[in-house]
Length: 222
Image 1 (spheres, one colour):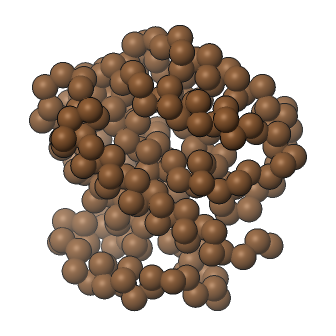
Image 2 (image 1 turned 180 degrees about the vertical axis):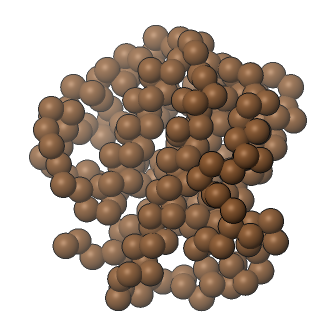
């Protein structure tokens, strides 16, 4: 099964209106948040942690797909960092940070439109990064704490997810993505993140994201 561009997964996004697509983007980036917020970036990037915090806060404040001046100002502040004027060769954790920032850049460009293609790009990015980490771990001699729990998860995962034949993080990301998209489609209006269901989804995304960050921190730098 094509985990990148599965027709059933894409069909969920096609059923969403603009506000719901914004929520799908937000939850996908939330699954990449801990590497961005909890792992220090290289000093030479010149990224102010306060600017990152402001971007994440404003990025969560309005999820209706409409233009958002406060978010745009927060992104403009972050984009003045030297990082945006240089070429870098990132370590694996830094790759996640750069991809998360790139995702937020796409959000800033998408506001007011939030097309299916733009939404799909960010959702697929979260899938690809999860798969990238699985492959990296398969090819490293580093033993990362929690390996037995990750293997046990794959043994017990539901058949629809098992059919993709993916590693732990790629499978887990698809599981959380599916729960987010089902809730987005079932919700009435743009207030899902503030609801009880929304808070449960945020907790799921954050648990997954913190696990990503923990593994990334455990991988030795080259």
